[in-house]
Length: 124
Image (cartoon, helix red, strand yellow):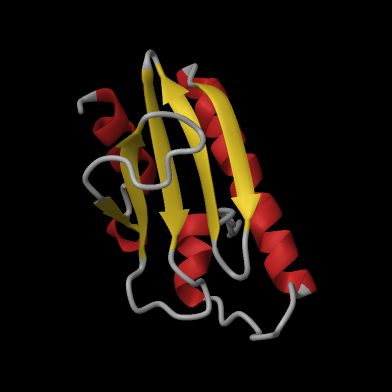
């Protein structure tokens, strides 16, 4: 019998990964953030969203992208704790607006993260 191994997405991995805590960026965190950035970049290209930017903070990530004329901001919680296993997403006025509109949280554990993110930004 042939086994099929499906590669897990970053939003599946984040739920089961125990990130090493440190006062600086660890190789594990840097590699993970690079994977998240790559996923968001591909997602934006696939959906024809523009002006994508990404920032890797101290065990969190954030970024911006534009859908038609509407800017969007996203931010993770500290990945070392899964207290709130979701991505915060909200509208904003541009790539310097960190306050923006109402917070929407898209959970990582629903099995529909990508679809829920797409639904939010397309239908808001």
